[in-house]
Image (tube, rainbow over all chains, first blue to last red; front, side):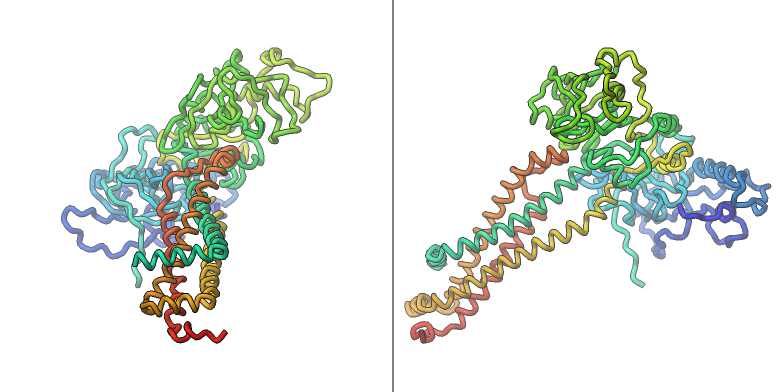
Length: 197
Length: 424
């Protein structure tokens, strides 16, 4: 994990003025693949969504931290570490967006393989930025999509960028911390290609 | 056309000495290409097949690739063990469904011995979520009464002729001969697993407690002189394992994998590492990839060299065959017939070489298969060629045909008069 100052991390996470307000509310770094301008979707075609939309609009992760003046905290302060742990718990319990569940969507992201067979990938996680494995704290629960391709996706490896499309669901067998993020039984998994500019 | 082909064959047979050497070199080049491709695909498939349904592999902090190599593929050694307390802490994480501890280090006739729990036989899966099956017998009991019971993989049963009831002794550390034996505490084979095509086939499975028991009198790193703890007496000791080499972890929900991975990485009492098996494998291929590419490049170069030798031999032969070609021309063959004749000859030689090469490659796979299975638990399939193999085979034949056009073209340009009145 890169040595990021705890104060900066806290500040970033709490949407503090240290960073511009333009930073999206999920705290997701802007390293994810840029979305090409969305063309008007044909009727019945999956709607292309952004990772931000997976977070419910009314969810406020800072609710419990409103009265904190983190600027007073020092990096070495054990209270900062404790606070980070508490925030981690909030991120882990991040809710899913009920408005999106059940919709047929299309979204780009990075592949983290789970089940690799001779036929191809049968299960993988889709995450919004590269290095979601170890280099940074894991993305919150609503920023991970558990993808089960309908036909095994052949020729993809760890951290390849792909487009997936399919119906967004939340699994019912839900035993982990109340929420478990999203799941897509993907109709299609295609390689992400950046448009030449 | 048929007549032309007959002449080509007869003409080639007439110079079979030199052409046989060319056929041999093309055959070796083809065998190299096909064998390498087979090895590459089967090793990848074998590794990908080796573990399934496991979300994380947890071990002492090292490189993710190394952890996978020794914990799952039984290649190389562990840098350090992990205390059982840490494994229990991981097991207690609310997202974790099951944990199967693995303890490695001993061997039997060069095959690894794995200490584990009975949960291994229920939880461990390979291929596309296939559970382990028993070809004969049952799992080890995991109790004190069944302390010295062992379950063996299919390759061991086949190669060493063991069946349930067989008595085996384990060896301290690796190595085949001249090794320190745990001869005082023999094990009884109670089960033989069905073939999996993975390293499980060459593994002896015993309980964690059994590994503790056979090492009771090895406290100093070697048998303590004068101290002998008989097999029966060992049951009276505390055999609860204190440490293991690694553990397989299954989650209740796979989305939580990053959280548990982070939990393990930040575990304060011990430096631990948790890897996603498929991600670690991809890392391994990234390391191995360039080596594979350069091997493939070298084999392609070998193929080019052998085709060049084909062209050289036929070209060199042209001079001796000026009379022969001229006679053909005199009896009515056109220049294009001469071209076709030489091209057909080259194509025949290439085809013969490529076919021989494919046969040699298949024979190599059949011959080396058992060895690879024994050493690495990787199964080579001698069956249907892969798409890439067909491609390589086709490329060799096509390149050979193209190359034979060169002497054909030379002969095409030779005039009738030139052949009939050689200066020599």
